[in-house]
Amino acid sequence: MLDAVAELVAELGFDWLLHRNEHRTMTQQFCLFLGIVFGLFAVALAVVSGPLYGAALGIVALGLLWYGL
Image 1 (cartoon, one colour):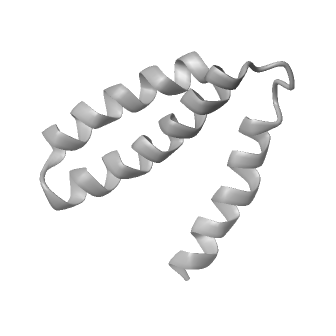
Image 2 (tube, helix red, strand yellow):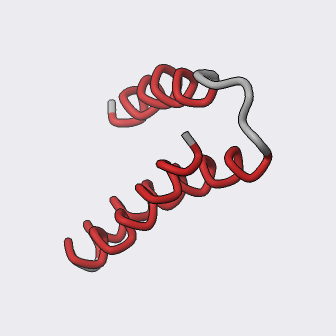
């Protein structure tokens, strides 16, 4: 069940996010990719190690996403 939800979010959300702006530079595309990866790591880190560690990595992920968008 969780796999189906994760797949639906990936299909709908990431596809819309990535194809929203076709004129991104390579640096912006790379920062967008790293922002998504770090965001997923932040959620996992918050669950495993504690919310403060997840929040710290989440701030980095938001900065990368902001630059990539």
